[in-house]
Length: 334
Ligand code: NAI
Ligand code: MG
Image (cartoon, rainbow, N blue to C red; front, side, top):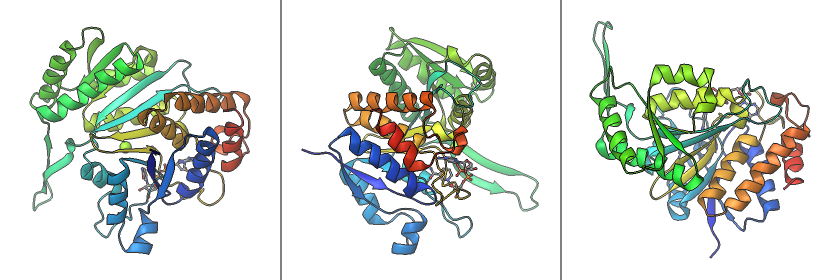
């Protein structure tokens, strides 16, 4: 049976990087079929809804989506489309690899780590948000569950096992936030005990940030709660040359959505200037997920070879190439 994936072309540079990515995927002969679905501003204009029910149904049916960035209009009380997608499909694991690539603005030679961020609870619930009438005091709640911590730490260890990685570092602040971060750390220790072949390390989040910018090569897989993961994964993207090369997967039990970490880049939209690599690397994560690891590896190698040759690179990487030209240079090295 052919696997169908939902394709969301998105807003801003979204359609350009998606065209480039699908062009490369076609050359890989993945056999994947695409089902187009609208979301974001495009969908608001066409269907009167940022995330139409038909799009949610498409993702639910296919269980896998490749998604370009979306604009959530500021004002008008819209909740972030990305946050609501994660909630709707319970996409509890946000998996963001960071590797050093050749000829990028990275300060480091040998970063090769994956951040596994809990994606559904913690500070992002922002429960009971309140500002006192006099505006002097504000409150926002954080909730951590055993179930949520267990499944994310287990995901990190299973990822280590399946990819041959050797170490999992749990990043926390249990020394200060004893309740929530304490529960996360306690559960992380319990789960770690079930994986004796994989090294387990604990690190307090502030120290982790310093260690990351001093000696990032010491990290393999980092697992952490929602807000720490948000910050740390952006920090890691910075270690390897920025947003143009940062992919992310949002994975749940019943669905997975693969995307670039960057936004819609309105400043360069429609000009063919966007770097398609982040979405291409997300597509490689997707190929791993759908059981095509050889194709995923071919794609990653072709990207590395193209960067090495400085062939048709886009402006963010110091080149003068355009989005589709870059994609064609990558496709020619598959
Ligand atoms: P952004 O990531 O869109 O842009 C930041 C800077 O990076 C800009 O200078 C942009 O030109 C550059 N950039 C981003 N991606 C690039 C690429 N592939 N190639 C070359 N340069 C690239 O972040 P910003 O400006 O904060 O957000 C713009 C819009 O994107 C907002 O409406 C925001 O809500 C949305 N957004 C959507 C996300 C998603 O759907 N996953 C994630 C982040 C932002
Ligand atoms: Mg973020």
